[in-house]
Every structure is written in C-alpha cells, then in structure tokens.
Image (cartoon, rainbow, N blue to C red):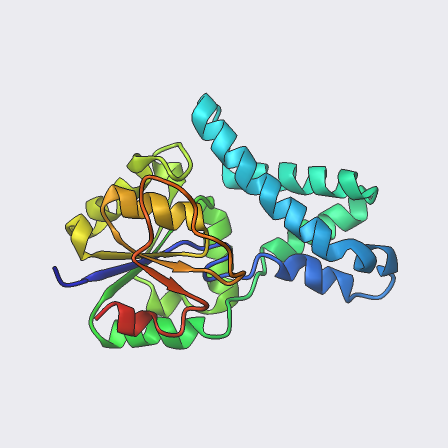
Amino acid sequence: MTITTCVFDAYGTLFDVAAAARVAAAEPGREDFAKHWPRIAADWRAKQLEYTWLRAVAGHHRDFWDVTQDGLDWALEAAGLATPELRERLLQLYWELGAYPEVPAMLAALKQAGLSTAILSNGSPAMLQGAVSSAGIGDVLDDVLSVEDVGVFKPHPSVYDLVGGRFGCAKEEVLFVSSNGWDAGAAAGYGFRTAWVNRAGLPVDRLWGTPDTILSDLTTIPMVAK
C-alpha cells in the first residue's frame, strides 16, 4: 500500500535532546558542568524515558514536562551538581531545542511530494509547540499529536491510534519514524511501516515488531516514503 502519511517522533528524532546540556556546558562559569555534561545528558534522557514506561505500566500518568524535570533532577543529583540555577538553565534550554540539520529540507521534500506530515510524541502540547516554533518547522507539519490526548505514554497502542484518527489513513499507509529503537519496533508491531533512525549504531531491540528500515539520519526519508 502506498505511503500517504509520514509521522515522526519528536525528541531525539527531529529535535536534538542533548543540545540543552551541550549549550549550557559551553557557557562561561560552568566548568564543573562541562566536565560531566555528556553523562548528565545521557542520564537525563535515560531516566526521562524510563519514567514514561514505568508510569504507563503502573497507570500513574503525568505530563512529559513533569517527567522531564524528574529525570533531570535524578541526573544532576547523581553527578553531585544539583544547584537550582543550573537546573533552571537546563530546563529553559530544553524549550529551545534545535532540529537536526537535515530536518527542514527533509520535511519540505515530503510536503512537496504531497504527503501528510505530523509529529507523534510523548511531549506535552506546550512543549512540542515550543520546540516546533524554536526549530522553525511549523509550516512543513500538518499536525502535532501528543499522548496527552489519551493519557498514557508510548508504546501503548492507543497512542499510535491517534494517527488514524487524525488522518483517516490505514496503518499500512503510515511511515512512522523514530530514533528510539523500542518506539520503531513497537510501531512496526502495531502495523505501521517504520524507519529507525539509529544515530548511535545500536543493536535492534528484541521486541514484538522490527523496524522495516534502519538509517543513520533522516536525509533519505523522502526516498523511503516513496
């Protein structure tokens, strides 16, 4: 079946989640943080995701901004750098994440080819709108879908249901793109065609679905969608 709709995960897929820590580390007076920022950024992201899974399984949903703050608090405490000023700066920068360099042209090419484009993310609507505006890609997206509409995080099937509900398309008409191997695998198991943007060169997750395509970045997505 022909692809009609390309749907993207947001954080780590379109938006560089390490950018907040990387920018803060380059600022004057942050020498201690600069020594540890890669580990803090990795821990922040790992805990952010871990907390979404645990909350989804336990039925204790909170929006992604709360979970993002909780993950950062854990990462800063683990590094012994839990100061209010640094915390506030990192959270501020998280609202200003830039897109990966290939994103604007890639999305424009999809729109030029006549495909619908959207984000499907764990992020809260306000967070996602801030990221889309900061990256300047709102004009090449047809919609931004948030798990807040169903009150549970990915990979719950009700999240993936949002795509068909919005665009009226069959599962087989959707190309779902994520940098998270577990997300791409779960979406494949749901019935989407999937592309995993494996920027880190990781092994494939052993799940109930396997990505159809594995890429190192988003540049060739318009060709995958043909």
